[in-house]
Structures are given as structure tokens and as C-alpha cells.
Length: 228
Ligand code: ADP
Ligand code: ADP
Image (cartoon, rainbow, N blue to C red; front, side, top):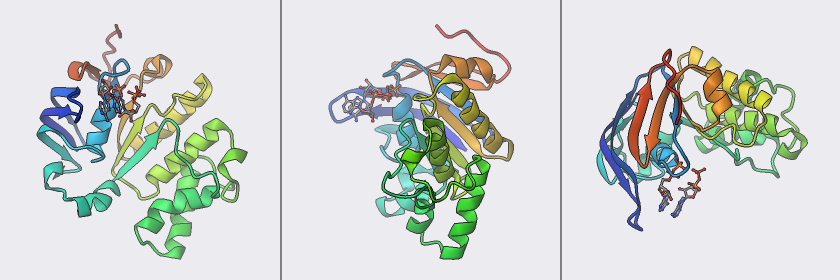
């Protein structure tokens, strides 16, 4: 599903964010991406979403070599990746319905189908009935769930999240993580960048640890190595 083969990422300012990174995430897996701030987690997620391109090495996402995805094909490529951010990036002057519908409208999907899919996505995150609210009428945890609904509304086979619980208290973090797990249980591949220790403790899933842009640890689901 995701394969990195000796991937490097160097930014224009010379900063090497990822160095010789090789790793495989199989279809249907759920994994945490951990490491201190600056370790390269966001950079890796940006390469996967084609927000940035590798400087060297081979990166396969959803069975596609990103080197072969031209600029004009990026929107179609991204439709197969659900992205969740820490600050959820909701449009505050739009309703919950409009926020979740946005990726479908951009994709040119028709009206009736949009309504059906938006309600299904809101149902999956427990927010059915809140379509007509605006983001500020919802709690922080609910807003983050809207962000997840928007990420999954196109039914992407891959879900990536960058510190999705960074602004949430422990109960809400676990709730959000349980939503990710439910998507994983129905076959979605999930990669979550997080240094939320509580979350890591509660969910014994695979952990891929980066340190200064290099792979510093990769522990399978049932073996939990202690974080330094
Ligand atoms: P986090 O640790 O939560 O990933 P960062 O502070 O590393 O946050 O990065 C925040 C944003 O700023 C990211 O989009 C990252 O790509 C960008 N960024 C980080 N460092 C630099 C830099 N030196 N120059 C330009 N952009 C940067
Ligand atoms: P993390 O998400 O683990 O905090 P990042 O991927 O954001 O790590 O950052 C890795 C390194 O790359 C950091 O040193 C950061 O400052 C640098 N970096 C990130 N984005 C940029 C950018 N757009 N331009 C230059 N340097 C960046």
C-alpha cells in the first residue's frame, strides 16, 4: 500500500528531513508514526500525499509510483487518500454538511450521491443530525470528527493523519482513535503521526519511529518497545 525504497527528502533550504528511509505498510494495516518534533513525520506524510516530492528514492502509494504522477493527476491521486490534520482545517463560514461535501463537489460527484455519502460519513463519526451546524457550534472533539468525516467521504483506501489528537483531551483522543480503528477494521489502511503517549499506550498497533529523518524503530503490533 505504501512502500519507501531509500527515500530522501531535502528541502530547498538544504534541510534533510528524511534520509535513506525504506519501509513497507501493507494494505489493511494500521500504524503509528512516532518520533520527536522535527523527526520527519510531517515530511513523510507530505510525500505520501504528494504535497512534497521525494528528492531521491522510490515511493509507492496505493500501488502507484509517485514519480509517475504528473501535476495534473495529483487531484485524482489525492482522492484516494484521506487526510486528517491536527487543526482540522474546517471552513468556519460553511455548515458541517458543506465542509464534508467539499471533496465530493471538487470531484464532480452529483447532488443526490453527495447527500447520501455525506450522511454516511457523518454517521460513521457519530455526527448524523449536525449537518446544519457550523463548526464553531461544535466542541473541539466534534470538529475533529467532522475533519475525519471529510477525509473519508470519498471512501479512500488510505487514511493518513498528522497529530490528529494534538488539541484534544485524553477522552476525546481515545474516541478519535477508536474511529480510526473502526475504519481500519473495515479495510482502510491507516497511518497516524503522533507523539501522544497516552494514545500509544492504549493502542498496541505497529509503531514506526523516526529520528532525525531516519528509521529508528519499527515494532509490530503486539510488541511495544518503550519510547526513549
Ligand atoms: P510539527 O512538529 O507539528 O510537525 P513543525 O513545527 O515541524 O510542526 O512544522 C510546522 C509546519 O511548518 C509544517 O508544515 C512544516 O513542514 C513547516 N516547516 C517546519 N520547519 C520548516 C522550515 N525550516 N522551513 C519552512 N517550513 C517549515
Ligand atoms: P515532524 O513532523 O516529525 O515534527 P517535520 O517533517 O515537520 O518533522 O520536519 C523535519 C525537519 O524538516 C525539521 O528539521 C523541519 O524544520 C524541516 N522542515 C520541514 N518542512 C520544511 C520545509 N518546508 N522547508 C524546510 N525545512 C523543513
